[in-house]
Picture (cartoon, rainbow, N blue to C red):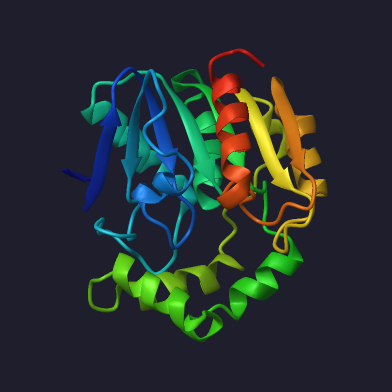
Length: 244
């Protein structure tokens, strides 16, 4: 389905039925990435899965990517679906978007799980971002990206946006901003994330009032796929149900 909003066409899918659960994919991903973790939409939830701005089948790419704008896009989608409050799972860049949502309109996010999402980009991440290009990928990864982002020049724009993130200033959450979050928040981090040191997870945990921290031993960036998936699903869904 397509929603024209904020000067773009936002593609989204709805799966399952029940309470609304917004899934926000990571950078270079698409909404259907949830299928790499969940075998089906979680029981009791309607999963809302947009392709975020400029990704997949959504348009609206700009010279730089704004996670704050992505949060506004998400609120526009919720307004279109006539949803006042939701729960959110955000992965990496999607987690940054979730943090923006929870600080822009705290009352609309009741609970969220943010995975590998930093309050700011550290030097080690910025160095990787500045050098990010298609040449950084294996042949298999390059083919998969081309399949996901099919429009002429789309993938090149996403690479360019990633390089620009190093100096764009988003995210840059202060402790005061994070303290305004009212959502129950589960922060998920791998202790071997090559982009973000584990200290950033502790920064989030200390600043967000009703937050919990789950550090996954030997976990890398986005430690919720493959063999780690079932444990993540069990833990995240128990948290969102309030059975923490």
